[in-house]
Image 1 (cartoon, helix red, strand yellow):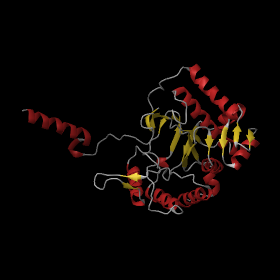
Image 2: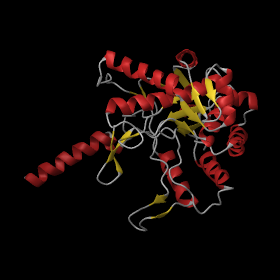
Image 3: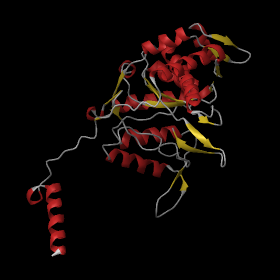
Length: 325
């Protein structure tokens, strides 16, 4: 009797999934446009958040950030920042930061290869992508091995398959392709195997421009049409504490000029290159994110920017990152 009951239960579950007589289910979940139904959970009080923001502004104003790219220092100086060329330190006044925050868009519409996969990046929207940046790939049959173009293409196919993954990313590094040509292979895979929002590495102006040109050709866009909408994105990492290196500063300038999305993500490890306290690490993260955001808005007011965060802490026993904040 127990077996019969279990069989009946399984039959009912299958009927609920497939409908009557095996017909297609009427349930059609929409994973392409997700909203967070929950309110943000406050960790700090309103006064404490204001204090973190004010302290970050003081860090930029009084201590500054080291900017290694001369062109970026020139752009910031023209906007009123104080630049010491000998030390490459740039002090950015809070009035400059305030103007940048005012011009940054609160909602960003990004355009994929298929209009049904366009996204709106704003508070409350939930956008998912696969983990990215790994040098190696592993599976149960072949084990751990260096990333290849074939493996990268397989990951793109998987991301394309799942609607809950909304954007593409550099899942792994195709190490079998020469560095000089790797960006061509990566961009080609994204643009031919998927119609979702692609990622373009900020690895110098020539490679960035190649990526933009490939995207325009595939999407059938003129240069003006491309610049009037956001069709790709990149991630900008600061070198904590308080340093913006040459490729990342150049990436901010290149993407801002083209009107493409910048996810500015400080890489602060509390206890290593950031203060050990959560409040201290967040203050440094905030200062670095504001520095990158400000540079982008000076280059082109209204540049689509996303505030990224990779703040974590260091396990002092092993020296490895531990829990993500």
